[in-house]
Amino acid sequence: MQGFGVPFFVVLPDNRFTDPVALHPRLSELGVYASPHPSGRPWLVGRWDHGELLTVTVGTTSVALIGCFAAKAGELREDVGRMRQLSDSDLITRKYAGSYHVAIAMGDRMRIQGTASGLRRVYHCELDGIPVVADQADVLADLTQAELRMPTLAVRLLQPSFPLSERPLWSGVTPVEPGHCVEVAGNGRSVRVRRWWTPPQASRGMAESAAAVRAALSSAVSVRTQLGGQVSTELSGGFDSTSVTFLAARNGVPLIACTALVSDSTVDDSLWASRAAAHLPGVRHEVIPANEIPLCYAGMNTGGAPLDEPSAMAVFRERALGIVARMAERGARHHLTGHGGDHLFTGSPAHWHTLARRKPAKALRELRAYRISRSWPLSRTVLAVLRNQTFSEAFAAVDLTPGKAVDMFEPRLGWNTDLHVPGWLTSDAEEMIASEIGELAAQVAPLAASRGTHAELSAIRSGTRDIRALARMSRGLGVDTHAPFFDDQVIDAALGAAPEHRATAWRYKPLLAGAMRDLVPGQILDRTTKADGTVDAVRGLRHHQAELAEIWEDSQLGRLGLVDPGRLRSLCARTDPLASSDLGLSGALACETWLRARCQEKPRPRSER
Image (cartoon, rainbow, N blue to C red):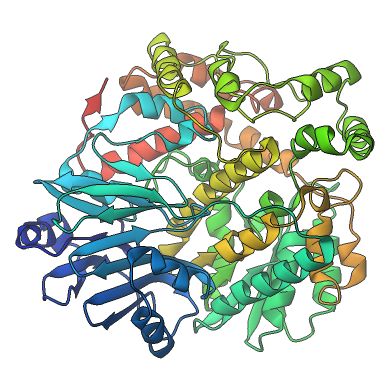
């Protein structure tokens, strides 16, 4: 279950059968807290820090906010007094900035929801006939002694996007999709999952959209700076982290801006970070030399704290925590990052597959620019524009050829269903993956009607999975990591813009630039370069080759029959790491380190084949 200091909560219905769950030894041994129903029975059971839980009761209605929020008790009490049904949660989520779960108990009915972004998740299961809801899947898995689903673990080796990323990792523990909620009926026995969020209509003009993004992002950053304690920000030199840092600096709190240097001499991020810092005289600029931070792939064979699910962030764990640890040494309690800016403001070129039917002249100009800048072959670009597969057709037709190289020149105008199947999978794992795809293909629907919005929502879900993992890892150092770009209100503001204001090859993140105009210096907003970190990643792979090869000498994945340890060992031991970087190694390491962390904490989970 959860490591020391990591917050979690379990929600219980208001009936006499829930007492054994609240008194479960796996909960009690963690020193958990409890927040009761008006009846006095346990409602929320878990662990949270001061300020992370706010509960208000008016009559027979109780509302709890868990996480990071701008709400205060008095104002929230007025809102709760106006609630008449469970769906009135909109009175709260549309009003208060931040990132938080909402739990509502109205009489003998309940509703629990996370965030539309997926940063705050919800899971449910049944324990002794009682529906139990939690924010972490592994909590419910431990409570119910759930079996690990081997097909899902096989799928996770591929680091898939939606819908494979939503497959349940534990038998009997059901993940609730972002934008959906769990409602428990009055009998305290039946559960219904309902959608509460849909993407906004993408129709606003640039000026209106920029103003909306500016207001939402400003509020999102302000919530974090008002939590108390020293605040630090990432100042990589990139557009996104720079915007967050400038917004944080406006709030009048002591601020540390952290720039971690890289060894790649062609990357100019540090130059742009210095230029930004020169405009922030009241901000302490902490520069960490490249040789003082672990490389990518460091510490892969040393375990680490267990995560809720396998995460590719494990590959960057020591490097990311090295930065967080430096900020902790400087007294930081909250660390703000720019993660999410790429997901919201780069814009998917797949929008132009749809726009080509409505605005052909403009689409021709945009697609030509994309084709030239990304080296897409003309004939393949034309075919991609003409192809009209539905999402289910594209998903069912996914290429599962093992070892097939990723095609970097394929025009990205489709439904984003690509999968890279590495050659080190066993035939059993390949069969499981094919079976999961076959099961989903007949029933799956896209996240949005248009390809572009679907691709962006899928990318947002992937990004929030990374941040959940990073936040859980950094919590062990006493630091809360925040990603304001992933707040629902910021996402609504960004996705409400007409797609042509975000998806363009002619300008870099024009909507974010418009939102930050006059807040961030113009020369920084006009930056056109962007680092990708490839050189440092390959350097880390080369430096840690021997350790990575050693991992597969005694592999948990190998014992489960999902991977060929010999092929992975050979892959890691190659003299040319660049040739290994495109063969899915991150997925294997994410799952292997996750299994090892769980096995260190308790006996190896049983498997379901």
